[in-house]
Length: 196
Length: 172
Image (cartoon, rainbow over all chains, first blue to last red; front, side, top):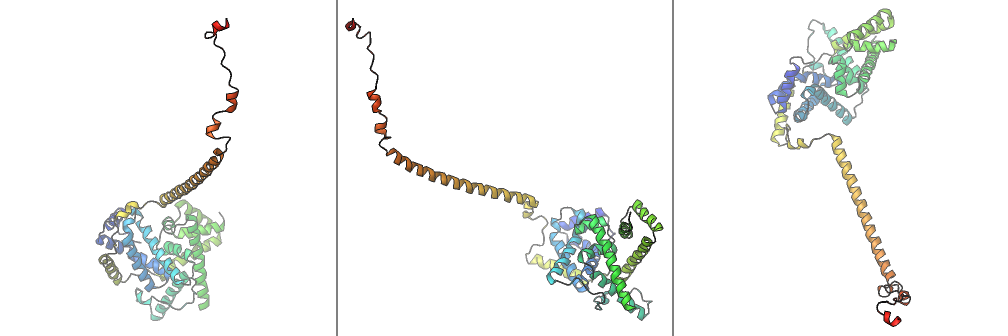
């Protein structure tokens, strides 16, 4: 979650971007491209598609930012655009949302930072495998559970902020996150049982 | 609170979405309930596991280059990317205003059509009536020439009484 700027500074940047400053738009991109990219990646499941959709999201932000009435709502608006891009893509491709937990295809190894050089090769492989399992577990969730779960657990967003992005009630968001937690736990449990 | 409710709150607690009072209530319940305590530990481990095994990645450098290129291309192509304050924004109003406008226009049109059809019918009716009147006036009994002069009136016209001043001498 970007925390380098205060809400006032962010509003100022948004206003300058609304006035057409490409520099200000780049500042917004710098602040939010990483969380948005990861949000999309966790929803869609692959890095390649996440790259495309991140680009589409920011392109839309650039063309529509002039119409944003309240600059303090920028963050929610941005995530909503990103979420819509993912949903549109899923609808277009009629992608199956029920991905098997033992799907071995892991499409983002090359992009993972090698932040654990002390791990021996075998443990590295296991670690990467588990990374793929987490992604598969996320993909096994129903989309309405997945987006709120990713926003809460990975993005660390408050439930209040999530309600603004997904347009659902606080109780609905809370319940869906709880159900997602149970589903992810079950998916991982099944995987671990299968492995052992 | 029931265990199910507490477990819902545990999820919120782990995501940092409870007030201190609510969090204390959940913790207090977990001290007394082994099932909920176990659930709390399980879910805490799950959060930690998920975060450690799906770290956030940095988007590739070329993404901005491609994006800025596309923005530039759009500008050059005349497909106005710049929509800061386009003139048509002036007309951007809430949807309900447009809906009300459309409803009013439809109502006006339907009234107009109704009015037109009514007046056409009325004209037709009057025309028919006129025609009927011609037929009626063609009735010899109602003809203006004859009808104004009531033959009975002429016959039954009272006789002028004798003026006593005019013919007083004669009477005498």
